[in-house]
Length: 120
Picture 1 (spheres, one colour):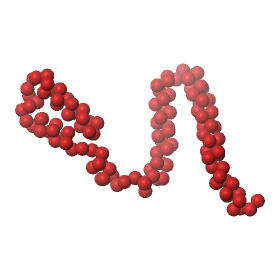
Picture 2 (cartoon, rainbow, N blue to C red; picture 1 turned 60 degrees about the vertical axis):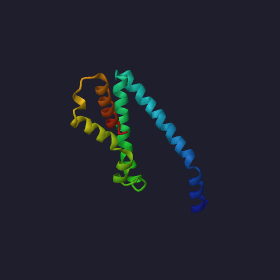
Picture 3 (cartoon, helix red, strand yellow; picture 1 turned 135 degrees about the vertical axis):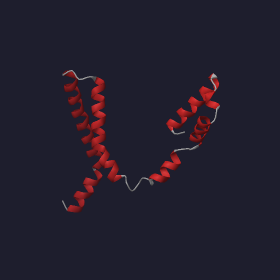
Picture 4 (cartoon, rainbow, N blue to C red; picture 1 turned 120 degrees about the horizontal axis):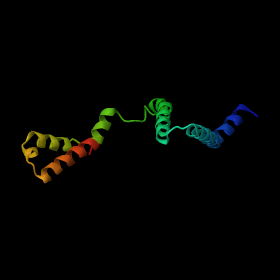
């Protein structure tokens, strides 16, 4: 078997090898979960540890492999954040509208604060 034919075979087998590796990962995770929960670990604590360790493992790959694919941070921030709710909230805070004790005005102020927090 020549080197080119071996590389071609390996290239064609990549999806199958990925699925086999993924199944080994699932099996290992099942063993770890069973062991941790049998020793008395809380379900929620285990979920937090699992997500934190996954983030620690995959974050370097995301940073280095996806760096050239992501847009610059300035354009992303400008596209994802609207400044209209911030201006409305700022104008309500600086004006006397927020000082009235009516239920309707306080509800609008709360809506603006929530909208600004979620970035609408």
